Amino acid sequence: MTNRLRKPYIAGNWKMNLDRSKCLALVKVIKGRLRDGNDREVGVFVPSLYLADVSAVAQGSPLGIGSQNMWFEDSGAFTGELAARMLREVGADRVLVGHSERRQLFQEPDSWMSKKLRNSLDHDLLPIYCIGETLDERKANRTDRTIKRQLESGFETLRAEETHRITIAYEPIWAIGTGETATAEQVAAVHKMIRRWLVQRFGEPAANMVRILYGGSVKPDNAKQLMAIDEVDGLLVGGASLQAETFLPIIEFDAR
Ligand code: 13P
Image: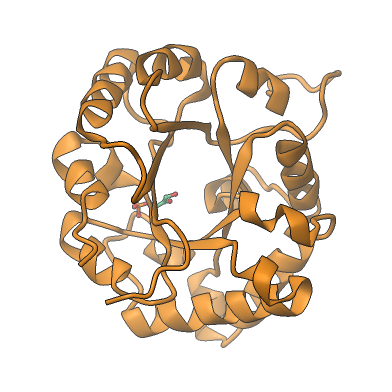
């Protein structure tokens, strides 16, 4: 039984999957199954193109609607990009920052992360800051160094009084979409290290406000076990969030 200081947070990252009608149908099902949102927070990160429609369907429920990315300037010559205030305007209340696919496939550098986090908070778009090591980094015992580098670069401008608005997702890259989940020991060790870093940086009360999620091949049959790890405050789910049959059992994990 975990001693929960923080409300559990289950998030679905739909990536570049599902067409408009499937997004709307899935949001309708999730909305219908959510209770008042008092004992857990649920959010879905949808293709930005569908944000307005999806948030209209989610209206009136505690379901959070988020974008999978954002740019850190308010306006200007940034072809193809979307500003935090634009995402807010079409109903998003949260955003993923630094997902490993953005970092790896689209070469997003560490130096953008603190600007994105700063701008998202300034526009009241609650960020999930994604961090995680590659398989090579883990094999070379460089996991801690990588995670600390990502924390340092992301949290450069953040203040202790803002930590309650920030969520971190630890997603080991080797566990994303591979069916290979990190072991409970591996997850606990990295989450503990992240918490220690936060305590050093912000002091204990502020550090304890930050939720730390795990992501990487989360499925209905491992969600409860992952949520039973003391250091895990929630889950960021990719593939299994694309269908009600697999996402609802994760959302409805039994906390007892
Ligand atoms: P999978 O759950 O498909 O491994 O994806 C994890 C992820 O990248 C969530 O952001």
